[in-house]
Length: 178
Image (cartoon, rainbow, N blue to C red):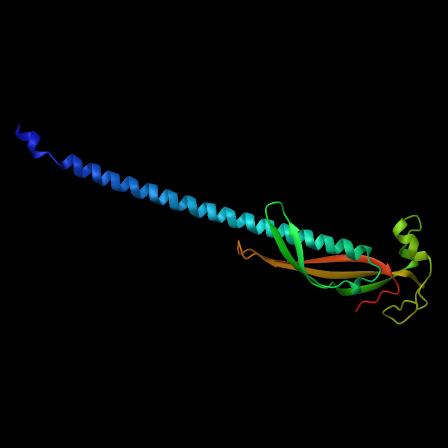
């Protein structure tokens, strides 16, 4: 009988210590789970915001390809893009021309629809080489490189995205690179 009385209460202390250790493990598991959930949510918000910016850029590039005067396309500060989950407001800059090059008639293929318009009339100015000699008469087209940028900031998720898109466009010789 004496042995039983000397151990009374020790089981309770060991059980309480084990309960505290298990409680700490559960609390840390919940914290790690919540952190991982926030990380996944942030990654999803960033991906959706990037997709919205890309959709707005592609729409602008399509407009640029169809325009007769790209320099007349204005900046669009509020383009709404619905990704299915959310609607984002994207700001698109005015397209900027960064490079222009006359297209010589020798580089054109008369069987291609896009090149046929370049044979309608030719530019009266001849191209000049680096040595100063005149080359062939350029066609009625120019190849130009344009840049357009998109940015968005989503107040709800805190996602911020900035993108720059380049577009190579064949335009008429009358279109100047500002």
